[in-house]
Amino acid sequence: MEETLSCLQCGKCCFVDLTAYAEPGDFDRWHAENRQDILNIIETRHLVWAGDRMISTHTGDYQRECPFLYSAGNTWRCSIYGTRPLVCRKYQPGSSELCPQCKINGKQKT
Ligand code: SF4
Ligand code: SF4
Image (cartoon, rainbow, N blue to C red; front, side, top):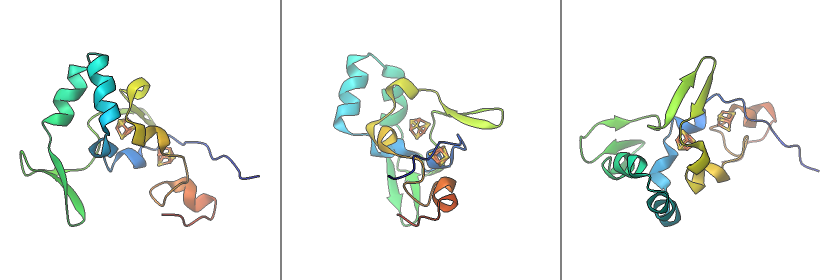
């Protein structure tokens, strides 16, 4: 049976801004929940991949961390956890090299 890895709340998976991969179902849910605050932030950023980094076509700025990530002392948290995008819900600790748990477990999945 495969070991279930715990999340260290290190925030590394949120420093690539997974919200750029929000799906239509996420937008539908945020509209239904009247989360215009989330929609305003995501829809005005216009993120695209430019080679090896994500930039905003709106400002030209390099985007690093997710706008909903915040520091809570020694850990990092999601300010929209209850309604975070599906891509974030699907991401499992250790499921890619982004996550330090991947190396701890000796896996090299990508
Ligand atoms: S990179 Fe892994 S350990 Fe860190 S917050 Fe993401 S899932 Fe958790
Ligand atoms: S929405 Fe939350 S879980 Fe998803 S990348 Fe941003 S901070 Fe991380």
